[in-house]
Length: 227
Image 1 (cartoon, rainbow, N blue to C red):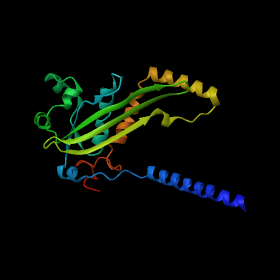
Image 2 (image 1 turned 90 degrees about the horizontal axis):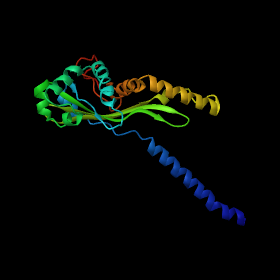
Image 3 (image 1 turned 60 degrees about the horizontal axis):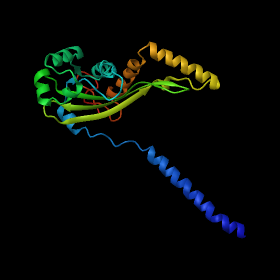
Image 4 (image 1 turned 90 degrees about the vertical axis):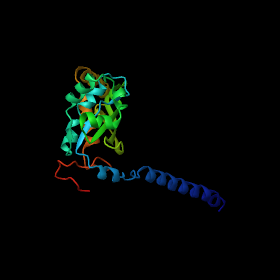
């Protein structure tokens, strides 16, 4: 009888702990609040100027590696995208060679020079391979802001990432297999531009219209105007 009385509080405590853990897990799984598209829909951008991305990584190839992968998903989403090479040359002729300086140009001035409705401001958070004893993964993470160049109003923000680890077949072969795979991955990463390929996946996830809280379809898309 005494043991039953003594164990009862512990059972209650255990039940409470399970409830708390379950609540925490449910809270973690709660999706982010829906994006407010009011300004986006009112702006109705048809053309987009992609600015050179800010590089917040140690990899010097990050800016142009990411920039080269952004045009296709935007075009497929129904927008006219100003040619990257033309934009880059125009900026250079005006003495703007640093992405940080380009991002400081007034939106009205960018609209005057390029005639685009909106500007896409990108920031590269991670770009390149991360090496450990048992693995070698290539990761690219990018944040984006879409701004109306006519009014300066922010229309949309988003972020996306991709990793070569997503394509891994798991830890088959035990420790030896993991070591061999790590060596092979390092060789592949050093002899091919894997970061550029992963940047393409990141770009698709970030800028493909129709995703939850993603970009809206542009006027060149048959899905334009659909919720």
